Image 1 (cartoon, rainbow, N blue to C red):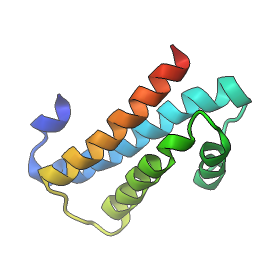
Image 2: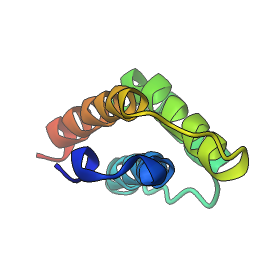
Image 3: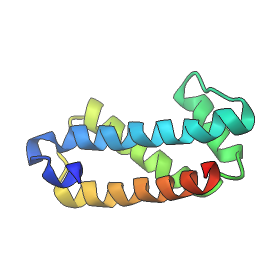
Length: 102
């Protein structure tokens, strides 16, 4: 997997990629099911929290978003272990989305 091949200096970008992958996965569910296309993160938070099919992944999504912000705005250095932990959160989101759109 590409995440396992990223050198340490670029793990911040991997964290950001994990979050934006989750964002697009969530949008795959929101538009077809609720005709929602959130214009900003706050609208997306509300939509995820109130969409019964996505509520179970709300914490995973928010953690990915939080760590992505830390990466981009606080210049936090991530370790491989951090990326693995966050990758597991994305995997949970992928499973839920796949079960909905399949």
